[in-house]
Length: 523
Image 1 (cartoon, rainbow, N blue to C red):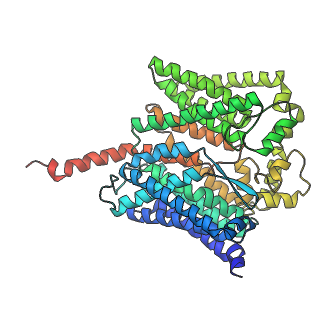
Image 2: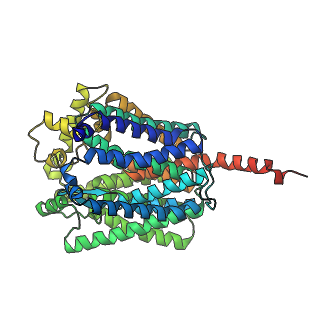
Image 3: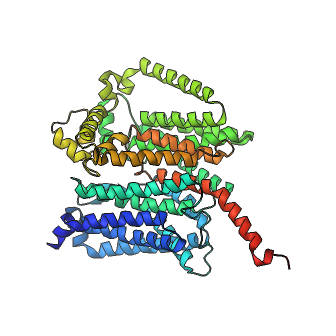
């Protein structure tokens, strides 16, 4: 009876709303101490909610039969978190390169015969960073170098940045509330537990940093090094015609003339997107750095990464790359030149498709080109028409689509089968079907607030230009591949963008405070 209540009763729904409320408190609570306490509570309650939801699941049968192994694994994780929290507490800026380094790594974990790819390294880093931040706010240990009052405290600065935080919190809370009437509560709960809750911690930790030139260069070096390494792995896969992960992609390669690589990622689209975003950021440095050695090095790296994107055969990643480069061109030069450059790339791409249509699946028709996504999009629009205001509930797209379209077509089976992705592959359509007009308006407002936060100062600041271009590229990618706030890169870019937007005002406030200190006053 207790297990039934934990899984199917009101407890998971209530816990989900509490976790979402804590995420909002971590972003919006006034003062460092309330924010730190909300982050700590979020860090503790999130895994508890997950365990309560899956404890009676057959997937945990191994842990039930071997509890000592589970306790040992948990204790090891706690030790790693504590050990990593100590250097972060003394040097808070370490959280930035550590987050960038762990962003792409997903660890396959098998329980009960089912394998899940989880961002375990990133979770450990965020847990350590949260503990370090809480320690700095509470004044323990005394040798902690972090300032209890952040350099960029939340709820201050430009109005757009404040609204961005409010809309992020509103989106997470609305998702949790609409999960209460969803046909797939467990999927919605996992979305919050694995993505929204931990990524909220990342956003809160990154927005408080002082993003100096040295810190930005360090993070860029980490990202470029990872992208090169992943590209080399992809080259090996292509040369040997073998893949390390994703049995579905292996089967797809066997049934088609083309061969798509995914490197160490589970999905070739995620691999291509990561490379595309790194290329956009690196292109920003190429446009602004006039030292010839850096120019040559950046051009060489871009050439290597471009080959990696092409071998992934991810059309959505190529579109995202094009959008990011167009933003950089518009920022650096005139918009008309950017439009001409975009048209030129489109013409070249069209010619390539015309010369080799089978490579891109064009002979299969529009639905074949999109891997069956046309049917999913039309189905999602139909679902929105049925419940236009509040939708079918968070995470319900897969269940409701299968209910309304039982005989899934062969082209869309990979997306609408129980083991598939479970969405329309087009974020606005998925939001409209699951959350209705209410969720769609918050999503559009979030994008508008992000744009108003990231755009100011882009012409004079190459870092802000790179963040804006990468964010636009990511949004464009989600229009054809449904994964926006489920991607930690989104929260990383937004946290960094908010910090950069608030930096000028924070620096002015620091200078004023310095002039008012007793040692600065005349005797």
